[in-house]
Structures are given as C-alpha cells and as structure tokens.
Amino acid sequence: MNALLRILAWTLAVALVALPVVALLNGWIASERWPLRTLRVQGTLHNVDEQQLRATVLPYAKRGFFAVKLEDAQEAVARLPWVERAEVRKHWPDVLEVHVIEHRPFARWGEDRLLSEHGRLFPVKGIRVPASLPLLGGPDARVQDVVALYNESRVLFASTGQDVRALRLDARGSWSLVLTGTTPVAGSTEVIVGRSDARPRLSRFARLLPQLLAQPQGLLRRADLRYTNGFALQWGELPAPAPASTTSQGNT
Image (cartoon, rainbow, N blue to C red):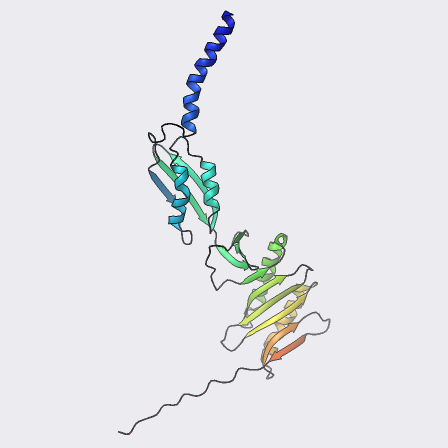
C-alpha cells in the first residue's frame, strides 16, 4: 500500500510539473506573457504580396513564442503565390522571422502553370503572368527535355531573326514550335517537327530558313518538317502597306 501511494505521489508530482509545460507549449496559458511582437521578413520580394504574407503568418504568431507552430506557419507561407520556398524561425524574446525565396518564372507551362528557372511548376492563380514569357508544354515528367530543346532551338534560329515563342511536346511524343520574327511585319510561323530526329530536322530547317523568308510568295505561316527530302510549306498574304500620310499646306 505504501508503495502504491508513493507511485501515485510521484505521478501527481510529475503531472504538476509537466502539465504547465504542455499547456505553455500548446498556447493554452500565458501566450500574452511571451507574445511575438515583431515579424521580420527576409528576402527580396518582387511579386509576393507582403501584406498577404503578414496576414498569413499572424494567426500562428498569436499563439506566443513557445506555442507557435513553425512548421504549420512555414507550410502556409509556402502555399502563397510566387513563393518557391519559405522558412520560419523564432528569436528570443519576441521575433518571428520569415525567409522567403520567390519563384523566378522562366516560361508559361500549358494553360494554368508557370515553370520556374529551377525547373519547378507552380500555378498561375493569383499571379500576373509576364507577357514576354514563352509558352512551353508537355508531360510533367519531360520538363527537362522540353527546356533543353527550347534552348537549343533559340540558338539555332537566332541568326535568322526568329525567336522561339512556343514549343510543345504532345502526348504522342510529337514536337512542334512557333517562331516569331523580330520585325513588326514578320508574323509567326508554326513548325511541325514530328516524333523523331527533332534536332537534325530543326537544324536543316534553320539553315534554309533565310532563303525561305526571302521568297516573294508572302509570309511563311506553317512548315511541316516530317518529310525525308524536304518540307511542306504554307504561305500567307503579306500585309497591305500602310497608306502614305498626306499633309496639307494652307495659303500664306
């Protein structure tokens, strides 16, 4: 009986010590005694809305220094538009520090996502998409292949005065791209590459493109490279020249 009483006494003593600690760490008590008064944002923010960031962190900060759940706060910040990575720390006695690294967009990916410079896909919801970004697309598992061919194609066509504005790999493994000229009247050209020998076909087409663009037929609208000994080409009409402006002179 005495042994049982001693066990109960020790259990009660441990509970009396542990419960306040548990209550403190869970924010049940004394959160107002050790509040987090300062939110410090680290990192250069170009696109992340700082007011939205602070509003996201505030509910976690209200729990106080000991009870704030850093992992939960970090996950909430990481879900904000433009945030690639977030880290949340606390510093005694009252500082909550949020370090944010933004996505740096490299291209649009399909209709509803962007591709970062680090090769990560993220949604466009809540994001103003820069108009200058190229449009890429393909299976998510082939991101690296799509980016590699895009970069190589830009180099191939740079000397022709054409830029690669879009490149896509479809579900069947067929490549296509869109070239846009650097002059206002150049228009755009859809290039169907096909499933095999994409790089040799594009290289051959790039070598001949200056001659094709010099033809008087009109604008090159479409080129199908899926032929062994040549290309299938479609031409469009050249834009009508702008009417010459006339100026009238009054009598003096």
